[in-house]
Image (cartoon, rainbow, N blue to C red; front, side):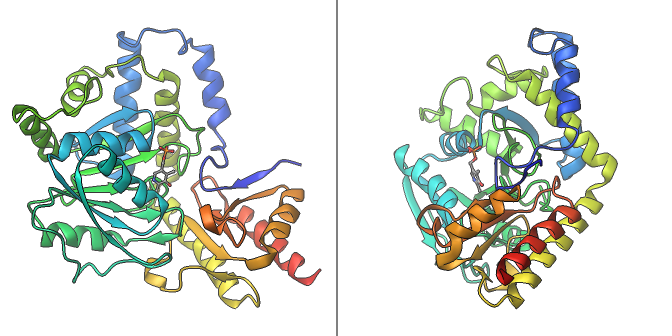
Length: 361
Ligand SMILES: *Cc1c(COP(=O)(O)O)cnc(C)c1O
């Protein structure tokens, strides 16, 4: 029996992953130079497919980094002279805040209770903040901030940079890149790959900020500063020796997703999310952690499973269904269910059926 991983990253691998990996090895991608023409093609193809899939405009730069925590650090270094502001509603948004603090910035934040969102109309942001950092899908609590809220932040605070963590939701959310300056994600969540590659999008405004900070004598980092990344990006390269095979695989998986169609992927994501929320809204014992439907994540769903959590988790593992455990303090009282493009409607039916059986046994 093969396992199905519903874990929120790393997760189930995309069905075509192995085929593309074999092809990568057969064509020597582990050995080719990252300064040659072949690499350039791989780099530009991955960018092109990402742009098409996620509607990223041509004038927005796409950089390849090592992970999303790295992206957070680069964003703070390159876009914040002194003051950053963070919407914190779980462990990952807090991490973004902590990174800014550890880099010596003056950090401020608004904290929402676990399982809750924010009020975009009445949110107050300190005047001095240079950037607003938002976690669009907070994987630890299963709270998703609607895209329209994030776009509203830009309308309300047009001078401030907006950075959005879409790590555990991409490619699902529909980001308007005229209202978001920076976005980032990792490949081990919605893209069905092993961990080891981060993607960061940066617009002109964010690049200008990095250059301005340099002029003011502020340290924006070294080989992965925005200007250093840009200098190589133009040539279809990266500053360091990159993970060529992963950049290739990401390009290929985006191509497969484009063939399937992003609208279809989004529709299925919504269908599967509805299946899970309907099931647990009606369940006698287990319930969705996020009560406000507007803030319920489509891509990482958190269920309160109480004292039975550990037994439940182990029973499902026996059936080859690997669910995520609750994050941090919730480890023994919640489960998390990833709903990524790799997961089929059939997979979800199987998983919910298993829950049904367990409840009756
Ligand atoms: C997983 C995750 C991260 C961290 O990604 P890494 O690739 O481990 O650096 C950041 N933000 C969110 C919302 C995540 O789910």
